[in-house]
Length: 576
Image (cartoon, rainbow, N blue to C red; front, side, top):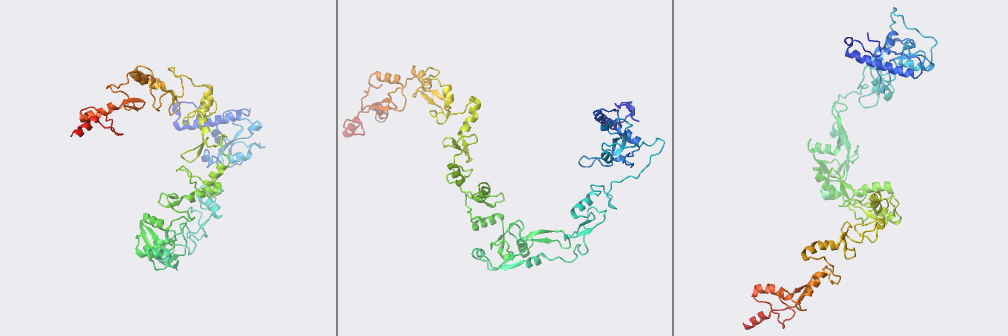
Protein backbone atom coordinates (compact mmCIF):
# COMPACT_ATOMS: atom_id res chain seq x y z
CA UNK A 1 0.00 0.00 0.00
CA UNK A 2 1.18 3.50 -0.74
CA UNK A 3 2.30 5.86 1.97
CA UNK A 4 -0.75 8.13 2.66
CA UNK A 5 1.41 11.06 3.62
CA UNK A 6 1.27 14.05 1.22
CA UNK A 7 4.97 13.81 0.52
CA UNK A 8 4.65 10.19 -0.54
CA UNK A 9 7.90 9.38 1.17
CA UNK A 10 8.34 5.97 2.68
CA UNK A 11 10.95 3.31 2.92
CA UNK A 12 12.85 3.38 -0.36
CA UNK A 13 12.87 -0.41 -0.53
CA UNK A 14 9.03 -0.47 -0.72
CA UNK A 15 8.74 1.82 -3.80
CA UNK A 16 9.56 0.94 -7.41
CA UNK A 17 10.09 3.42 -10.23
CA UNK A 18 6.65 2.90 -11.76
CA UNK A 19 4.92 3.45 -8.42
CA UNK A 20 6.95 6.58 -7.82
CA UNK A 21 5.71 8.04 -11.12
CA UNK A 22 2.09 7.12 -10.39
CA UNK A 23 2.28 8.48 -6.87
CA UNK A 24 3.75 11.78 -8.01
CA UNK A 25 1.04 12.18 -10.64
CA UNK A 26 -1.69 11.48 -8.05
CA UNK A 27 -0.24 13.97 -5.59
CA UNK A 28 0.05 16.67 -8.24
CA UNK A 29 -3.64 16.28 -9.20
CA UNK A 30 -4.68 16.15 -5.53
CA UNK A 31 -2.78 19.32 -4.68
CA UNK A 32 -4.26 21.13 -7.71
CA UNK A 33 -7.77 20.18 -6.57
CA UNK A 34 -6.92 21.27 -3.03
CA UNK A 35 -5.72 24.70 -4.23
CA UNK A 36 -8.86 25.21 -6.31
CA UNK A 37 -11.06 24.35 -3.30
CA UNK A 38 -9.19 26.79 -1.05
CA UNK A 39 -10.20 29.63 -3.34
CA UNK A 40 -13.86 28.98 -2.41
CA UNK A 41 -13.05 29.36 1.29
CA UNK A 42 -14.44 25.96 2.33
CA UNK A 43 -13.09 23.17 4.51
CA UNK A 44 -10.41 21.22 2.67
CA UNK A 45 -8.28 18.14 2.99
CA UNK A 46 -6.05 16.21 0.62
CA UNK A 47 -8.34 13.98 -1.47
CA UNK A 48 -6.74 11.43 -3.79
CA UNK A 49 -9.05 10.53 -6.70
CA UNK A 50 -7.93 6.87 -6.87
CA UNK A 51 -8.97 6.32 -3.25
CA UNK A 52 -12.42 7.82 -3.97
CA UNK A 53 -12.91 5.54 -7.02
CA UNK A 54 -11.83 2.43 -5.10
CA UNK A 55 -14.06 3.30 -2.14
CA UNK A 56 -17.13 3.67 -4.40
CA UNK A 57 -16.29 0.52 -6.36
CA UNK A 58 -15.99 2.42 -9.65
CA UNK A 59 -19.78 3.02 -9.68
CA UNK A 60 -21.21 6.40 -10.74
CA UNK A 61 -23.31 7.71 -7.87
CA UNK A 62 -25.48 9.70 -10.30
CA UNK A 63 -26.51 7.04 -12.85
CA UNK A 64 -25.52 3.86 -11.01
CA UNK A 65 -23.56 2.46 -13.97
CA UNK A 66 -20.02 1.06 -13.90
CA UNK A 67 -17.17 3.44 -14.69
CA UNK A 68 -14.60 1.84 -17.10
CA UNK A 69 -11.29 1.93 -15.27
CA UNK A 70 -9.36 1.84 -18.54
CA UNK A 71 -10.75 5.26 -19.52
CA UNK A 72 -9.32 7.04 -16.52
CA UNK A 73 -6.61 8.97 -18.38
CA UNK A 74 -7.94 8.70 -21.97
CA UNK A 75 -8.75 11.76 -24.07
CA UNK A 76 -10.17 12.06 -27.57
CA UNK A 77 -8.91 14.39 -30.30
CA UNK A 78 -9.15 18.06 -29.38
CA UNK A 79 -8.19 17.55 -25.71
CA UNK A 80 -11.70 16.60 -24.44
CA UNK A 81 -12.30 13.84 -21.89
CA UNK A 82 -14.20 10.71 -22.86
CA UNK A 83 -17.84 10.98 -21.68
CA UNK A 84 -17.53 7.79 -19.59
CA UNK A 85 -14.17 8.64 -18.02
CA UNK A 86 -14.13 8.86 -14.18
CA UNK A 87 -14.39 12.20 -12.35
CA UNK A 88 -14.61 13.29 -8.69
CA UNK A 89 -18.00 14.94 -7.99
CA UNK A 90 -18.76 17.07 -4.94
CA UNK A 91 -22.18 16.06 -3.59
CA UNK A 92 -22.62 19.54 -2.16
CA UNK A 93 -20.95 21.80 -4.78
CA UNK A 94 -18.09 24.02 -3.68
CA UNK A 95 -20.06 27.02 -4.93
CA UNK A 96 -22.79 26.13 -2.37
CA UNK A 97 -20.31 25.86 0.49
CA UNK A 98 -19.65 22.12 0.25
CA UNK A 99 -16.35 20.93 1.79
CA UNK A 100 -13.52 19.32 -0.15
CA UNK A 101 -13.38 16.15 1.97
CA UNK A 102 -13.61 12.41 1.42
CA UNK A 103 -17.21 12.36 2.76
CA UNK A 104 -18.37 15.00 0.22
CA UNK A 105 -16.51 13.49 -2.80
CA UNK A 106 -18.06 10.69 -4.87
CA UNK A 107 -17.13 8.89 -8.10
CA UNK A 108 -19.08 9.84 -11.26
CA UNK A 109 -18.91 9.72 -15.02
CA UNK A 110 -17.42 12.82 -16.65
CA UNK A 111 -20.64 13.39 -18.64
CA UNK A 112 -22.87 12.84 -15.57
CA UNK A 113 -20.81 15.30 -13.56
CA UNK A 114 -21.08 17.88 -16.36
CA UNK A 115 -24.88 17.49 -16.54
CA UNK A 116 -25.21 17.84 -12.75
CA UNK A 117 -23.20 21.11 -12.89
CA UNK A 118 -23.61 22.97 -9.55
CA UNK A 119 -26.97 21.50 -8.47
CA UNK A 120 -27.43 19.65 -5.16
CA UNK A 121 -29.10 16.19 -4.96
CA UNK A 122 -31.87 15.58 -2.39
CA UNK A 123 -30.45 12.31 -1.19
CA UNK A 124 -26.89 11.16 -1.20
CA UNK A 125 -26.51 7.50 -1.93
CA UNK A 126 -23.90 6.09 0.43
CA UNK A 127 -21.18 3.90 -0.88
CA UNK A 128 -21.48 0.10 -0.59
CA UNK A 129 -20.32 -1.52 2.67
CA UNK A 130 -16.91 -2.99 2.74
CA UNK A 131 -18.18 -6.55 3.43
CA UNK A 132 -20.82 -6.46 0.63
CA UNK A 133 -19.62 -7.44 -2.86
CA UNK A 134 -19.76 -4.74 -5.53
CA UNK A 135 -22.53 -5.05 -8.11
CA UNK A 136 -21.00 -5.79 -11.49
CA UNK A 137 -22.90 -3.97 -14.24
CA UNK A 138 -22.37 -4.90 -17.87
CA UNK A 139 -19.50 -3.00 -19.50
CA UNK A 140 -20.68 -0.45 -22.01
CA UNK A 141 -18.49 -0.97 -25.12
CA UNK A 142 -17.05 1.79 -27.34
CA UNK A 143 -17.58 -0.05 -30.61
CA UNK A 144 -19.57 1.09 -33.63
CA UNK A 145 -23.33 0.80 -33.12
CA UNK A 146 -23.78 -1.12 -36.39
CA UNK A 147 -24.06 -4.86 -35.87
CA UNK A 148 -20.93 -6.72 -36.87
CA UNK A 149 -18.59 -3.66 -36.87
CA UNK A 150 -15.85 -4.01 -34.19
CA UNK A 151 -14.17 -0.67 -34.92
CA UNK A 152 -14.10 2.14 -32.29
CA UNK A 153 -16.50 5.07 -32.37
CA UNK A 154 -15.41 8.25 -34.13
CA UNK A 155 -18.67 10.23 -33.91
CA UNK A 156 -22.46 9.85 -33.87
CA UNK A 157 -22.01 6.32 -32.57
CA UNK A 158 -20.28 5.24 -35.80
CA UNK A 159 -16.73 4.35 -36.70
CA UNK A 160 -14.63 6.43 -39.06
CA UNK A 161 -15.56 4.45 -42.20
CA UNK A 162 -19.31 4.41 -41.54
CA UNK A 163 -19.32 8.07 -40.48
CA UNK A 164 -17.60 9.03 -43.73
CA UNK A 165 -20.17 7.07 -45.78
CA UNK A 166 -23.02 8.68 -43.84
CA UNK A 167 -21.76 12.19 -44.61
CA UNK A 168 -20.95 11.42 -48.25
CA UNK A 169 -23.80 9.15 -49.37
CA UNK A 170 -26.43 9.54 -46.61
CA UNK A 171 -26.26 5.84 -45.67
CA UNK A 172 -23.42 4.24 -43.64
CA UNK A 173 -23.99 0.83 -45.31
CA UNK A 174 -23.60 1.95 -48.93
CA UNK A 175 -20.71 2.83 -51.25
CA UNK A 176 -20.49 3.82 -54.90
CA UNK A 177 -20.26 1.22 -57.61
CA UNK A 178 -16.67 0.47 -58.61
CA UNK A 179 -17.33 0.84 -62.33
CA UNK A 180 -17.82 4.59 -62.01
CA UNK A 181 -21.53 4.72 -62.91
CA UNK A 182 -22.37 6.54 -59.65
CA UNK A 183 -24.96 4.05 -58.32
CA UNK A 184 -24.84 3.04 -54.62
CA UNK A 185 -24.20 -0.54 -53.53
CA UNK A 186 -24.99 -1.99 -50.06
CA UNK A 187 -22.03 -3.63 -48.30
CA UNK A 188 -21.62 -5.53 -45.03
CA UNK A 189 -20.99 -3.57 -41.83
CA UNK A 190 -17.67 -5.28 -41.11
CA UNK A 191 -16.13 -4.06 -44.41
CA UNK A 192 -14.18 -0.82 -43.99
CA UNK A 193 -12.83 -0.26 -47.50
CA UNK A 194 -15.02 -1.80 -50.20
CA UNK A 195 -14.96 -1.80 -54.00
CA UNK A 196 -18.32 -3.32 -54.91
CA UNK A 197 -20.17 -3.55 -58.21
CA UNK A 198 -23.83 -3.80 -59.16
CA UNK A 199 -24.99 -6.81 -61.11
CA UNK A 200 -23.58 -6.53 -64.60
CA UNK A 201 -21.33 -3.59 -63.70
CA UNK A 202 -18.28 -5.66 -62.76
CA UNK A 203 -15.05 -6.17 -64.67
CA UNK A 204 -15.81 -6.78 -68.31
CA UNK A 205 -14.80 -10.18 -69.56
CA UNK A 206 -15.30 -9.51 -73.26
CA UNK A 207 -12.75 -7.88 -75.59
CA UNK A 208 -12.37 -4.12 -75.23
CA UNK A 209 -12.77 -1.73 -78.13
CA UNK A 210 -9.33 -1.18 -79.65
CA UNK A 211 -7.86 2.34 -79.71
CA UNK A 212 -7.66 2.23 -83.50
CA UNK A 213 -11.41 1.66 -83.78
CA UNK A 214 -12.19 4.47 -81.33
CA UNK A 215 -9.81 6.76 -83.22
CA UNK A 216 -11.37 5.91 -86.58
CA UNK A 217 -14.88 6.64 -85.29
CA UNK A 218 -13.93 10.10 -84.02
CA UNK A 219 -12.28 11.43 -87.24
CA UNK A 220 -13.89 13.69 -89.82
CA UNK A 221 -12.20 14.58 -93.15
CA UNK A 222 -11.41 18.23 -93.89
CA UNK A 223 -9.60 19.88 -96.83
CA UNK A 224 -5.91 20.44 -96.29
CA UNK A 225 -4.87 23.92 -95.18
CA UNK A 226 -3.14 26.46 -97.41
CA UNK A 227 -0.05 26.29 -95.23
CA UNK A 228 0.37 22.54 -95.71
CA UNK A 229 -0.26 22.76 -99.46
CA UNK A 230 2.20 25.59 -100.16
CA UNK A 231 4.99 24.89 -97.68
CA UNK A 232 5.09 21.08 -97.61
CA UNK A 233 3.12 20.01 -100.68
CA UNK A 234 0.43 18.06 -98.79
CA UNK A 235 -2.41 16.70 -100.93
CA UNK A 236 -4.49 14.41 -98.68
CA UNK A 237 -7.34 15.68 -96.51
CA UNK A 238 -6.86 16.42 -92.81
CA UNK A 239 -8.46 13.87 -90.47
CA UNK A 240 -9.82 16.12 -87.71
CA UNK A 241 -10.59 14.66 -84.28
CA UNK A 242 -14.11 15.47 -83.03
CA UNK A 243 -13.75 14.18 -79.46
CA UNK A 244 -12.46 15.87 -76.35
CA UNK A 245 -9.34 18.03 -76.34
CA UNK A 246 -6.98 19.49 -73.76
CA UNK A 247 -6.41 23.13 -72.93
CA UNK A 248 -3.67 23.40 -75.58
CA UNK A 249 -6.12 22.47 -78.34
CA UNK A 250 -4.85 18.91 -78.99
CA UNK A 251 -7.24 15.94 -79.06
CA UNK A 252 -7.14 13.36 -76.28
CA UNK A 253 -8.61 9.91 -75.66
CA UNK A 254 -8.75 7.45 -72.75
CA UNK A 255 -7.17 4.09 -73.55
CA UNK A 256 -7.85 1.35 -70.96
CA UNK A 257 -6.21 -1.99 -70.35
CA UNK A 258 -8.32 -4.86 -71.75
CA UNK A 259 -10.11 -6.89 -69.06
CA UNK A 260 -9.54 -4.35 -66.27
CA UNK A 261 -11.34 -1.32 -64.96
CA UNK A 262 -9.56 1.86 -63.84
CA UNK A 263 -6.42 0.68 -65.59
CA UNK A 264 -5.54 2.99 -68.45
CA UNK A 265 -4.21 6.39 -69.42
CA UNK A 266 -5.13 9.51 -71.38
CA UNK A 267 -3.15 9.85 -74.62
CA UNK A 268 -3.02 12.49 -77.33
CA UNK A 269 -4.81 11.28 -80.44
CA UNK A 270 -2.24 12.59 -82.92
CA UNK A 271 0.56 10.71 -81.14
CA UNK A 272 -1.62 7.57 -81.07
CA UNK A 273 -2.33 7.91 -84.81
CA UNK A 274 1.38 8.35 -85.58
CA UNK A 275 2.42 5.29 -83.54
CA UNK A 276 -0.37 3.16 -85.04
CA UNK A 277 0.97 4.03 -88.52
CA UNK A 278 4.73 3.89 -87.79
CA UNK A 279 4.99 1.40 -84.94
CA UNK A 280 4.89 1.63 -81.15
CA UNK A 281 7.64 3.84 -79.70
CA UNK A 282 8.37 5.62 -82.99
CA UNK A 283 7.65 9.01 -81.39
CA UNK A 284 9.49 8.32 -78.14
CA UNK A 285 11.26 11.44 -76.72
CA UNK A 286 10.28 13.43 -79.83
CA UNK A 287 7.70 16.08 -80.63
CA UNK A 288 5.16 15.54 -83.41
CA UNK A 289 4.86 18.55 -85.70
CA UNK A 290 1.60 19.16 -87.62
CA UNK A 291 2.78 20.10 -91.09
CA UNK A 292 -0.73 21.22 -92.00
CA UNK A 293 -0.94 23.51 -88.96
CA UNK A 294 -4.20 21.91 -87.65
CA UNK A 295 -3.72 20.73 -84.02
CA UNK A 296 -6.64 18.25 -84.24
CA UNK A 297 -5.40 16.62 -87.43
CA UNK A 298 -4.57 12.87 -87.07
CA UNK A 299 -3.51 12.08 -90.64
CA UNK A 300 -0.10 10.31 -90.30
CA UNK A 301 1.04 11.86 -93.60
CA UNK A 302 0.59 15.32 -92.07
CA UNK A 303 2.64 14.45 -88.99
CA UNK A 304 6.43 14.46 -88.58
CA UNK A 305 8.57 13.65 -85.53
CA UNK A 306 11.10 16.38 -84.73
CA UNK A 307 12.93 17.64 -81.68
CA UNK A 308 11.41 20.30 -79.46
CA UNK A 309 13.96 22.84 -80.70
CA UNK A 310 13.09 22.19 -84.34
CA UNK A 311 9.39 22.42 -83.57
CA UNK A 312 9.84 25.79 -81.88
CA UNK A 313 11.97 27.03 -84.78
CA UNK A 314 9.28 26.09 -87.32
CA UNK A 315 6.62 27.77 -85.21
CA UNK A 316 8.70 30.95 -85.04
CA UNK A 317 8.92 31.03 -88.85
CA UNK A 318 5.16 30.85 -89.27
CA UNK A 319 3.75 32.55 -86.18
CA UNK A 320 5.07 36.11 -86.28
CA UNK A 321 2.65 37.67 -83.80
CA UNK A 322 0.79 36.70 -80.64
CA UNK A 323 -3.01 36.08 -80.69
CA UNK A 324 -3.52 39.77 -79.81
CA UNK A 325 -1.53 40.90 -82.85
CA UNK A 326 1.65 42.05 -81.10
CA UNK A 327 4.75 41.17 -83.17
CA UNK A 328 7.33 38.71 -81.85
CA UNK A 329 10.36 41.00 -82.22
CA UNK A 330 13.46 41.24 -80.04
CA UNK A 331 11.98 43.87 -77.71
CA UNK A 332 8.56 42.24 -77.33
CA UNK A 333 9.59 38.60 -76.89
CA UNK A 334 10.38 36.72 -73.69
CA UNK A 335 11.19 33.04 -73.40
CA UNK A 336 9.90 30.63 -70.77
CA UNK A 337 12.25 28.09 -69.12
CA UNK A 338 11.05 25.40 -71.57
CA UNK A 339 11.92 27.58 -74.58
CA UNK A 340 8.44 28.82 -75.59
CA UNK A 341 7.92 32.40 -76.65
CA UNK A 342 5.90 34.79 -74.54
CA UNK A 343 4.49 38.16 -75.62
CA UNK A 344 5.88 40.84 -73.36
CA UNK A 345 3.18 43.34 -74.32
CA UNK A 346 0.37 40.95 -73.36
CA UNK A 347 1.94 40.23 -69.99
CA UNK A 348 2.26 43.97 -69.33
CA UNK A 349 -1.26 44.79 -70.56
CA UNK A 350 -2.74 42.10 -68.33
CA UNK A 351 -1.45 43.90 -65.25
CA UNK A 352 -1.84 47.43 -66.64
CA UNK A 353 -5.51 47.01 -67.56
CA UNK A 354 -6.33 45.76 -64.07
CA UNK A 355 -4.26 48.43 -62.32
CA UNK A 356 -4.72 51.55 -64.47
CA UNK A 357 -7.63 50.77 -66.81
CA UNK A 358 -5.79 51.15 -70.14
CA UNK A 359 -3.27 49.27 -72.24
CA UNK A 360 0.44 49.81 -71.80
CA UNK A 361 2.09 52.19 -74.29
CA UNK A 362 5.88 52.11 -74.17
CA UNK A 363 7.61 55.45 -73.76
CA UNK A 364 10.35 55.82 -76.42
CA UNK A 365 12.14 58.48 -74.33
CA UNK A 366 12.56 56.23 -71.32
CA UNK A 367 16.26 56.07 -70.41
CA UNK A 368 16.06 52.93 -68.29
CA UNK A 369 16.79 49.56 -69.89
CA UNK A 370 15.57 47.55 -66.89
CA UNK A 371 12.15 49.10 -66.28
CA UNK A 372 9.77 50.13 -69.03
CA UNK A 373 7.54 53.17 -68.64
CA UNK A 374 3.98 53.78 -69.87
CA UNK A 375 3.71 56.93 -71.96
CA UNK A 376 0.08 57.61 -70.98
CA UNK A 377 0.77 57.25 -67.26
CA UNK A 378 3.91 59.36 -67.57
CA UNK A 379 2.10 62.19 -69.37
CA UNK A 380 -0.65 62.07 -66.76
CA UNK A 381 1.87 62.37 -63.95
CA UNK A 382 3.78 65.18 -65.63
CA UNK A 383 0.62 67.21 -66.32
CA UNK A 384 -0.38 67.29 -62.63
CA UNK A 385 1.80 68.34 -59.70
CA UNK A 386 3.36 65.30 -58.11
CA UNK A 387 4.63 65.15 -54.57
CA UNK A 388 6.69 62.61 -52.69
CA UNK A 389 5.32 61.02 -49.48
CA UNK A 390 7.07 63.77 -47.47
CA UNK A 391 5.35 66.56 -49.43
CA UNK A 392 8.25 67.67 -51.66
CA UNK A 393 7.24 68.46 -55.22
CA UNK A 394 8.87 66.52 -58.04
CA UNK A 395 10.50 69.42 -59.90
CA UNK A 396 13.28 68.91 -62.47
CA UNK A 397 15.82 70.00 -59.84
CA UNK A 398 14.32 67.80 -57.10
CA UNK A 399 13.74 64.66 -59.17
CA UNK A 400 16.20 61.90 -59.91
CA UNK A 401 15.53 58.91 -62.15
CA UNK A 402 17.26 55.76 -60.91
CA UNK A 403 18.67 52.91 -62.96
CA UNK A 404 15.46 50.95 -62.29
CA UNK A 405 13.33 53.62 -64.00
CA UNK A 406 11.76 54.89 -60.77
CA UNK A 407 11.88 58.51 -59.71
CA UNK A 408 13.33 59.54 -56.37
CA UNK A 409 13.02 62.75 -54.36
CA UNK A 410 16.43 64.42 -54.07
CA UNK A 411 15.37 66.42 -51.01
CA UNK A 412 14.39 63.24 -49.15
CA UNK A 413 17.74 61.71 -50.06
CA UNK A 414 19.59 64.67 -48.53
CA UNK A 415 17.36 64.85 -45.43
CA UNK A 416 17.77 61.14 -44.72
CA UNK A 417 21.31 61.74 -43.43
CA UNK A 418 21.35 65.50 -42.82
CA UNK A 419 18.52 65.74 -40.25
CA UNK A 420 19.91 63.05 -37.87
CA UNK A 421 23.39 64.63 -38.01
CA UNK A 422 22.61 68.36 -37.89
CA UNK A 423 18.97 68.63 -36.72
CA UNK A 424 17.60 70.63 -39.67
CA UNK A 425 16.53 70.04 -43.24
CA UNK A 426 19.05 70.30 -46.05
CA UNK A 427 18.93 73.58 -48.02
CA UNK A 428 21.11 73.44 -51.16
CA UNK A 429 23.56 76.31 -51.60
CA UNK A 430 23.18 77.80 -55.10
CA UNK A 431 26.76 79.12 -55.02
CA UNK A 432 28.29 75.82 -53.94
CA UNK A 433 29.84 73.09 -56.11
CA UNK A 434 27.53 71.13 -58.38
CA UNK A 435 28.91 67.63 -57.81
CA UNK A 436 28.92 67.83 -54.03
CA UNK A 437 26.06 70.04 -52.86
CA UNK A 438 26.45 71.83 -49.55
CA UNK A 439 23.82 73.06 -47.08
CA UNK A 440 23.22 76.82 -47.04
CA UNK A 441 21.96 76.75 -43.44
CA UNK A 442 25.08 74.97 -42.22
CA UNK A 443 27.25 77.43 -44.14
CA UNK A 444 25.54 80.41 -42.51
CA UNK A 445 25.66 78.92 -39.02
CA UNK A 446 29.26 77.81 -39.42
CA UNK A 447 30.91 80.11 -42.00
CA UNK A 448 34.07 78.67 -43.52
CA UNK A 449 37.43 80.17 -42.41
CA UNK A 450 38.93 82.89 -44.59
CA UNK A 451 42.49 81.63 -44.19
CA UNK A 452 44.02 78.20 -44.47
CA UNK A 453 46.14 76.54 -41.81
CA UNK A 454 49.29 78.24 -43.16
CA UNK A 455 47.74 81.71 -43.24
CA UNK A 456 46.95 81.98 -46.98
CA UNK A 457 43.73 83.79 -47.75
CA UNK A 458 41.07 81.86 -49.65
CA UNK A 459 40.46 83.84 -52.83
CA UNK A 460 39.16 82.81 -56.20
CA UNK A 461 42.69 82.19 -57.45
CA UNK A 462 43.92 80.35 -54.34
CA UNK A 463 40.89 78.06 -53.80
CA UNK A 464 40.16 74.70 -55.40
CA UNK A 465 37.63 71.97 -54.63
CA UNK A 466 38.03 68.20 -54.70
CA UNK A 467 35.55 65.80 -56.29
CA UNK A 468 33.82 65.45 -52.91
CA UNK A 469 33.46 69.23 -52.51
CA UNK A 470 36.30 69.77 -50.02
CA UNK A 471 38.00 73.15 -50.21
CA UNK A 472 41.81 73.18 -50.49
CA UNK A 473 44.45 75.89 -50.66
CA UNK A 474 46.30 76.13 -53.98
CA UNK A 475 49.36 77.90 -52.48
CA UNK A 476 49.88 75.15 -49.90
CA UNK A 477 49.85 72.53 -52.63
CA UNK A 478 52.29 74.50 -54.84
CA UNK A 479 54.65 75.34 -51.95
CA UNK A 480 55.11 71.70 -51.09
CA UNK A 481 57.21 71.35 -54.26
CA UNK A 482 58.30 74.90 -54.94
CA UNK A 483 60.06 75.69 -51.66
CA UNK A 484 62.41 72.64 -51.69
CA UNK A 485 63.36 73.35 -55.30
CA UNK A 486 63.64 77.15 -55.41
CA UNK A 487 63.94 78.13 -51.73
CA UNK A 488 61.02 80.59 -51.61
CA UNK A 489 57.25 80.46 -51.51
CA UNK A 490 55.22 80.36 -54.68
CA UNK A 491 53.68 83.72 -55.64
CA UNK A 492 50.99 83.51 -58.33
CA UNK A 493 51.67 85.91 -61.22
CA UNK A 494 48.38 87.67 -61.99
CA UNK A 495 49.83 89.23 -65.19
CA UNK A 496 50.42 85.84 -66.78
CA UNK A 497 48.61 85.84 -70.16
CA UNK A 498 48.48 82.04 -70.33
CA UNK A 499 46.25 79.64 -68.37
CA UNK A 500 49.27 77.89 -66.83
CA UNK A 501 50.30 79.30 -63.45
CA UNK A 502 53.78 80.71 -63.00
CA UNK A 503 55.68 82.07 -60.03
CA UNK A 504 56.13 85.84 -60.20
CA UNK A 505 59.35 85.74 -58.16
CA UNK A 506 60.93 83.19 -60.47
CA UNK A 507 59.76 85.09 -63.52
CA UNK A 508 61.26 88.37 -62.33
CA UNK A 509 64.54 86.69 -61.38
CA UNK A 510 64.77 85.19 -64.82
CA UNK A 511 64.25 88.51 -66.57
CA UNK A 512 66.40 90.53 -64.14
CA UNK A 513 69.69 89.03 -65.46
CA UNK A 514 71.33 89.68 -68.82
CA UNK A 515 69.24 89.29 -71.92
CA UNK A 516 71.46 86.47 -73.06
CA UNK A 517 70.83 82.77 -72.84
CA UNK A 518 73.36 80.50 -71.09
CA UNK A 519 75.09 79.94 -74.46
CA UNK A 520 75.49 83.70 -75.05
CA UNK A 521 72.77 84.23 -77.63
CA UNK A 522 70.75 87.41 -77.26
CA UNK A 523 67.00 87.09 -76.60
CA UNK A 524 65.71 89.12 -79.53
CA UNK A 525 62.19 88.98 -80.92
CA UNK A 526 63.32 86.61 -83.69
CA UNK A 527 65.44 84.45 -81.34
CA UNK A 528 62.85 84.05 -78.53
CA UNK A 529 60.05 81.49 -78.31
CA UNK A 530 57.59 81.39 -75.36
CA UNK A 531 56.55 77.98 -74.12
CA UNK A 532 54.30 77.62 -71.05
CA UNK A 533 55.18 81.19 -70.06
CA UNK A 534 58.97 80.64 -70.28
CA UNK A 535 61.56 82.04 -72.78
CA UNK A 536 63.42 79.59 -74.97
CA UNK A 537 66.39 80.41 -77.23
CA UNK A 538 65.69 79.42 -80.80
CA UNK A 539 69.40 79.29 -81.69
CA UNK A 540 70.10 76.82 -78.89
CA UNK A 541 67.19 74.68 -80.00
CA UNK A 542 68.51 74.65 -83.62
CA UNK A 543 72.10 74.00 -82.61
CA UNK A 544 71.05 71.06 -80.45
CA UNK A 545 70.29 68.95 -83.51
CA UNK A 546 72.43 70.74 -86.09
CA UNK A 547 75.75 70.03 -84.35
CA UNK A 548 75.10 66.30 -84.31
CA UNK A 549 74.58 66.24 -88.05
CA UNK A 550 77.02 68.84 -89.44
CA UNK A 551 79.55 69.55 -86.66
CA UNK A 552 79.02 73.34 -86.70
CA UNK A 553 76.64 75.88 -85.23
CA UNK A 554 73.49 76.92 -87.00
CA UNK A 555 73.90 80.37 -88.63
CA UNK A 556 70.64 81.91 -89.77
CA UNK A 557 70.57 82.94 -93.42
CA UNK A 558 69.06 86.45 -93.59
CA UNK A 559 67.85 85.81 -97.16
CA UNK A 560 65.77 82.70 -96.18
CA UNK A 561 62.00 82.95 -96.07
CA UNK A 562 59.60 81.40 -93.57
CA UNK A 563 61.60 78.19 -93.48
CA UNK A 564 64.87 79.31 -91.86
CA UNK A 565 68.06 77.71 -93.29
CA UNK A 566 71.69 77.58 -92.23
CA UNK A 567 73.99 80.07 -94.04
CA UNK A 568 77.12 77.89 -93.61
CA UNK A 569 75.42 74.89 -95.17
CA UNK A 570 74.13 77.03 -98.04
CA UNK A 571 77.60 78.40 -98.85
CA UNK A 572 79.08 74.89 -98.76
CA UNK A 573 76.49 73.66 -101.26
CA UNK A 574 77.14 76.66 -103.51
CA UNK A 575 80.92 76.02 -103.47
CA UNK A 576 80.42 72.51 -104.77
